[in-house]
Length: 468
Image 1 (spheres, one colour):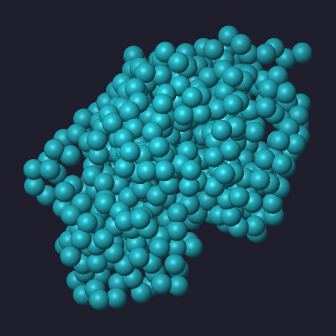
Image 2: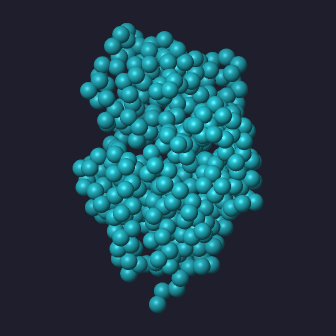
Image 3: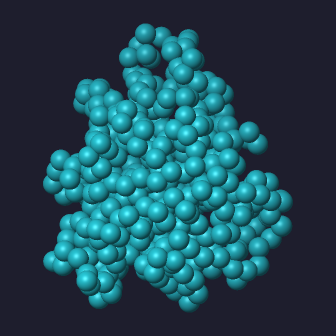
């Protein structure tokens, strides 16, 4: 589809890897259809990008395809943004004015047909409305999570006592599940500022013209159908890099917050097919010492090879000591890196399973690559995604965690064997292959996601503003 050069889209996101990635991948889809894209993110992202070899923010673009723009979140580059309360409160106070100023500057050059935001900048929706630009929400979690939040904050369905983790939740489109599996941001134990931040989003939805989901219809069919009667929702995923879907790998467009260690690919090349367990808990979570110790014990006992991502900040003083007690033979089958090209790792023939925190980006990438999952959720949408993996998708198993969120070494080993050995592994692998096939088909001509993306772009063309 050819699109007139006056069709421009602005995307707004926080500078977290898991937030930027789906925006970037949707941008690639739009660019392939002729749409011009600018991604606006917070200034702290600029500073982190400057320290990686994968982006060049000095030119304010990514490989000359996607323009980058920056606005301040009101904090200094050195501020520890893991302090969630300070970050949320400050960006709610300072972000609207700073983003508004940036939009004013950008619209001196382009008239935007749409601004696409993600769920973690709900205050941006009002800013966009004040500028008179149509707004879309890119929902970067499972469609099921959107449904749970929507029904909760809009008081559409009755929820049980959320204080009791064993209570059963019954909602349209989903099998019965326990309160421990709901997104943590609606739980009474969640800090008030996080709950209110989420409530803001659902209060602002009347100003959003499109809600675009990064999942795809075929894996959440019943829940998407259940949403149709209460709110427009359009799955356009899986939003992943094109090469994961069998397309020719080009000079890839990337915005990495951490320096990638490509040495792991050579290491994988020297491993037998389906012999490696990949371990990564994303860009935000810090691996506790208990987690490290239990994973290391499971590694020793399972006789599998492991590629383990321990990002900067994850007990870096103890990383070198994690292999205490390993034999020399065991050490040879374990590689620890700070960051890796995850999609390429998941596509590698040597990878047999993925121990994941169940971030939605990682889950989708595993689905498209056909890799079985071992779910180790922590917070926000991750417990719900873990429930989906085990009970709805059936492409993996879930670790049994204690109240501290940690799983025993014995249970980690049990799950590794579940996805690699015996009848259970064969069923999980079969289901993973089926989901991979469905993921590839949905974005082909005539697929459900392809149709939804085309309709969205048609809407942009029909409503594009003319320049004076």
